[in-house]
Image (cartoon, rainbow, N blue to C red; front, side, top):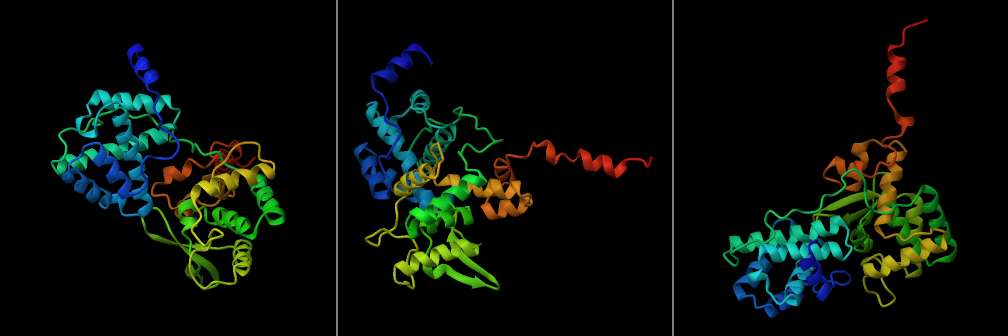
Length: 332
């Protein structure tokens, strides 16, 4: 990083972590209006948010957050998104790196803003995409960056939860692990979507992309859910997991919850709700489940994504060399 760029970054330290400046369409519109964007640009942004891969509410919210960071950063630098140059985009990417964000997070934020500009240009609401051709951080496609949990740690967490935590916490942790579900999907799980499919107890969850996927729920997880719902008086419908006032649990609460429970169960490092998804996929692969089966279970479009979770893929114990030698070894 050049001395002039370091000076500029240090003179106005960017706040690029924590709670996003906007998380709803209304908040983003207010942010853009304050930046001086014309009504045509606001309408184009609204159309962009409901087009393409942004049909899912969760995906849409992620794009809103990512664009809002850029809009606020432009304002802090005394500029606007409409006037942003390629050098300003480069400076923003340098600020993202300086803030200590993961490469995947930086890449996602830049991709979101670039997509937004591409749409604005198509609608003649912008003249330039300052991120076009920008060199994005290379991702490690060989491994997942999530800190996972071992089989023994998962067992310890569930055992501790059964003995010392609420029925809701125990059921929540079981469902996160048993479905390898993303936290947004698990928190959106509904009672009326629990059913039976032949001899399987199942739950239909909204997954990435806005589609519905059916998951088999093992007896231990189902029992935990039923015990929790019994405490609530056996409601017939609505969200499975709710707060004391009946509202949907928020992700920030679950982040704090899983870290507290993990520490109490003897896990010495910080984890996230995604750690349960990571661990379910990793354990399934280490148990010898076929890659395509685990890929479908995890909802990955690309098997290479699933392979990133296979910690034992280079284990000598799984080397085909022994089997190959046995199949051709001459009789002595």
